[in-house]
Amino acid sequence: MEAWSRFWRQGHTTTFGDYFDKGYAGPVKEWLDTLPQLIPPSQEPLNVLELCCGNGSLLPFLFSLDRTFDYVGVDAAEVALPSILQEPVRQASGTVSLLANTPVEALPESIQDVSLCLSIYGMEYSDLNITLKALHPRMRSSGQFFALLHHHESIVAKMSRRAVSEYELSDIEHIRDALTTIHETMVRVGNVEALKADDEAEKARKFMNGMGNKYLRGATLETGNAFMADHVMAALRFFKLLGQAPDTRARFISELVEEAQAARERHQQMLSVAKTAEDMETLAQHMNTIGWNSPCFNALTDKDGIIGWTLTATA
Ligand SMILES: C[S@@+](CC[C@H](N)C(=O)[O-])C[C@H]1O[C@@H](n2cnc3c(N)ncnc32)[C@H](O)[C@@H]1O
Image (cartoon, rainbow, N blue to C red):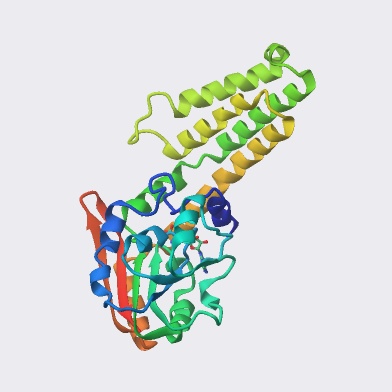
């Protein structure tokens, strides 16, 4: 779970933090926007549960509805409201709470009478047999369930497959060693002029230049190694820290390596939970046997390819 906690601590609103930094947009939002017409009008607040919610990934969508809702988001990682959502939450007429470090297989007793359960690229990370069975009695009769799950052949799955294959452990380790050499030399010699005159530090700097040439120069999205290009670009920011406190530089180096490992781990997890059509058929049948009504799944696509599986049911 640390790979996710590390990600959410960076304040993202969605898993695709760099692309969707104010909640989901694009095809996911277009699908979400079809849901309100399926939700019966009512004077009562919606009682919303978001499974595996990250930093409250569906709150921006829920705020865009003209409905009062009480919201509980549950996630096994260390999640928290990102700053961009704090003001809308303060002004919301309903209640909003994020339950961090809470696996959805073990929903707290306080979660009851859910009228709308949502999950975006979320619940498939849990043990679905347990989650869906434990969730059913917490739903209001005829309460609605809408989920978007990772698809084995989606654009995201392809990107993750590529990222995992592009991870070059030995270069990541050599980059760490080169930055450590420069950092330690700087601590010893105390200024940039003396650093430049040091043979080992200069060798390490040239190695970093070489990494820049290898991964950044002339690379296109199609031909380049995007994972390593990101890593090298992040690593090169080290040179801006030469004038900073030694602790800051040391922390930067360990963060850099840990972030690369965590990103790889998140991609690997994503691939391991992505569903084929056969998996979805089995899941829908399983939902039927544990009491869900009309479980129904479909591939969600847009002009660029497959976005995921939609899964809907009522309690
Ligand atoms: C791909 S992220 C999706 C987060 C969010 N729904 C979004 O779309 O941005 C998957 C999330 O599932 C959470 N997760 C994984 N296993 C879980 C479990 N057993 N119970 C609750 N959350 C879990 C992770 O911590 C992570 O935040």
